[in-house]
Image (tube, rainbow, N blue to C red):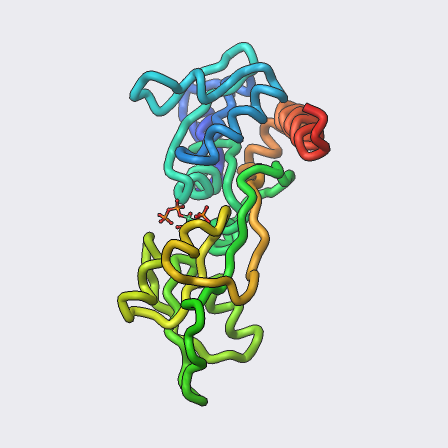
Length: 240
Ligand code: PRP
């Protein structure tokens, strides 16, 4: 029988002729590059005593092994983490709730890691006059699904314009009347003359796990999740 399409690599390989099952092989953890890597790395260090950031540092390698804890870390674009985990190229990952709610993938989300906190908001140019009655605002965003749901749930007509970055500049160039985007410090909104009208979603990073891997490596993943939960609870309680 062929393994499921989203089966982790270990299961797909073990199904090949002549390959033994390898339940003790390294579990792959996909971490996002960029601002979340540092926080995620600190959490893994508190939980397991290994720092993915240091293991990956100073090299162009995108993967580093930590056999003493049975893990391999890969560092990839934040937007790709959920895809790697859903398709079983990594068993575990760290992904923002913004990405998870936008893409609605088939993943297990056992843990709020309490890092990467920010919010998805609707923002308008400061002091912008209201649009004429009956005119749907043009809303620029990379969160097309989240924005569409937000306006639909409120029965507000809106024309969603998909962009892939630098969303905040769209209103000043006349491309959009408003934006839906993430904000952390609020600096980028302020610098572009925008002000928050409403919060759409509170965001933090979640641990995500491939559903097949969860069955295949149940005990190892249960221990990993428990260790990360303790580290995250300690961090959130300020007891570091
Ligand atoms: C995000 C977001 C804002 C910025 C907000 O961009 O899209 O541009 O961070 O942060 P602030 O409130 O602290 O100023 P990101 O760095 O993810 O890059 P992007 O432009 O590709 O979305």
